[in-house]
Length: 64
Image (cartoon, rainbow, N blue to C red; front, side):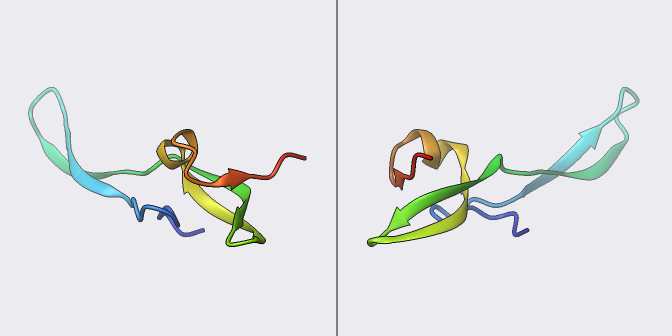
C-alpha cells in the first residue's frame, strides 16, 4: 500500500521522538488513509484517500 493520498499527495512526515532524557531518535507520522470507492470522471475506482480530503467532499462517494 502506498502511504500517499491519491488526491492531494499528502505523505509521511518525519521528525524526532524525544525521550525524558532529551535523547532524540527519528520517527515518522503517517497520514490517515482510507480505501474508498469513488467516481472519478465518470468511472468507479478504489483509491486511497486521506480523511481531510474525504471530509472536504472533493469526490463523489459511492454508497453501497
